[in-house]
Image (cartoon, rainbow over all chains, first blue to last red; front, side):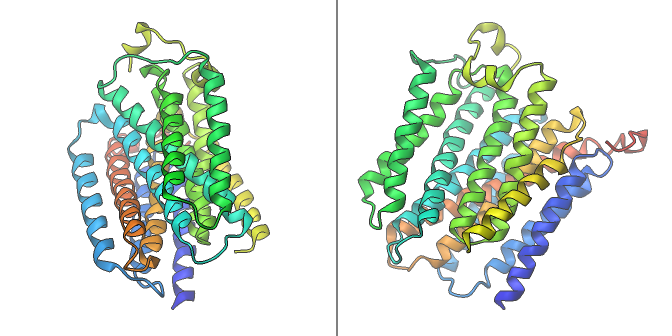
Length: 276
Length: 101
């Protein structure tokens, strides 16, 4: 049974890559997303039959609630509001990756292999950054957050906060019994980092930022795939991470902005927000 | 999983991701971003595995795992609907002879 499930995962990974390829050409784009959709459905279905699974009730409840709300909102939202929907769904993926890392940290049965602890911590930070960053991006595009905010010495603060958060992440990743307090601080800092990165950026640059955060989430998913020893997550996450990075660069180029100026030297002013 | 073979998977997948979208037209940038957003919704599988393997008496892990599945499901379902709606707009000019990429 387990071999069969792994084989289905393999086919799903192939379908994702072929689907993504199809999506990069207008004639086949719609078919591409449909293939990927069927593949996702198949992956979810076989996951129920993995050996040693419990909590089916909770699992199905969570899937039904999450999918139904997202489906309804996605169907009813106005076409012009699409970018912020992409942002918020992307943030949810990042949050899910961070939550997976949190459960892995709490699991106390086995002493982790060093690389597992490292990648779980990295995935947790990147996922949490994608979550809070996407929430800020959503709020900006939705018009809930009209101004840009910046702390003094923005880039230095971000740099040291990232370093500090990563340090805490490492100690958590390598300790076998991380405390709840430590974990809370770690995730709060990572969330703050994501917000701090996106708050100074104006609405017009948001598509590029969402694309970057999308690549971040892909990377986080890939890392958590390694933690869970699941090749499907590794492949899908890494493919999105790489294609998302390239797509970010292409988008920035198409808008005549360099990614460095968008992230590290945001122009904060009224003129930018009018377009968003 | 063996760390070294995972590293090889990472490398190959990264090049695949790069190659797959290397020649995307500007008009498809946003739908493709949305499409790859849907594909990383596969994190739902990870959430299900984590929640499924949590012992039923570990309340904290159950709660966090529940959130992971909830968010993952929203990512996958929402990402699909949004992408599908965006790409449905391309249906009409399909015969316009866009010539692929």
